Image (cartoon, rainbow over all chains, first blue to last red; front, side, top):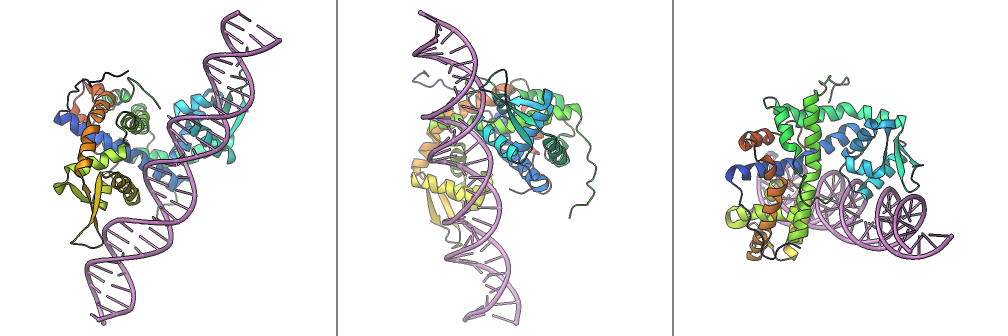
Amino acid sequence: MRPVTEPAVEPLSADEEALVRTLGRVMTVLPKLIDHDLRQDAGISLTEYSTLMHLSEAPEKRLRMNELATACDLSLSGMTRAVARLESEGFVRRIRCDADGRGWHAVLTPEGLARLEAAYPTHLRSTRQRITDNFADFDLVTLTQALDKVGCPGSTPV
Amino acid sequence: MRPVTEPAVEPLSADEEALVRTLGRVMTVLPKLIDHDLRQDAGISLTEYSTLMHLSEAPEKRLRMNELATACDLSLSGMTRAVARLESEGFVRRIRCDADGRGWHAVLTPEGLARLEAAYPTHLRSTRQRITDNFADFDLVTLTQALDKVGCPGSTPV
DNA sequence: CCAGCTTACTTGCTCGCGCAAGGAACTGCT
DNA sequence: AGCAGTTCCTTGCGCGAGCAAGTAAGCTGG
């Protein structure tokens, strides 16, 4: 239960306000831009790219559905459908998990790996242009540390 | 036309890679979290909140549809529907633009302003918790400068 | 002054996602 | 063994968004 009278929360300072607005813009625009680049130039969505990428990095190039969903920051149902799409195109196969009959492994096929590698240059170009090029004279490590903690704490649904 | 042979793009360094991954996570997760907080605790979507906020800050509390769409980083059609929803709840009115008969102003109603103010504490709490609290010991101004440039240059659709 | 282009917005369509409910397999208690 | 409870995934549904086509209003050149 949350207290009936909301605890007073300190309003944002001017600097904080500026940061929140900027980050708000970034978080709404950036995914659209990168997704758009990827669809336009590589014919693949960001979700699909991310899925293939995480599979390619996993041992045996396979992951359980829930691991994959977590890795891609997608709901389990969203991942079910994403994998279904990828499977229908032959980029992923699904096999039962023999240790646990309820579970499934999503397995990257050679075609899927090729698809990922084909899309890689587009993704690289997009992220360079949209992201890293803009941070030329900033300390990347500090920046990464700062962002790393965003969106973690408290009651974290999704 | 893009050259047939793609220009070689420098692969990402380890630090860049880390930043891109982190920022990727932030940009996919953060909007969902804040939208979720807002729906949960204030019964309003992030899109609607953003729309009301931008209207409340505009002179005369009104904006043309395309200005509003740009401000909220939404497509024009998306904004048409967002305003339609808000109008059906009485938070916004649409009136013809007398200078230009094709144009419409979205105008914030007193009820809309009240709605925004009612949702404000939730939004504040959410942004504090999800964003600024994590940057306690970072230089906000530098950080904002860095992020400010993200997603601007080149062929910028949306 | 009116024909044709442009601009501002809306509408039809489709897609991807999350939520909640469902089903199948595993686990634990008795 | 057997039943309750849990976990893992899928399915039905609705929503919000973008794209492309449509419509109405303004603008421009002959």
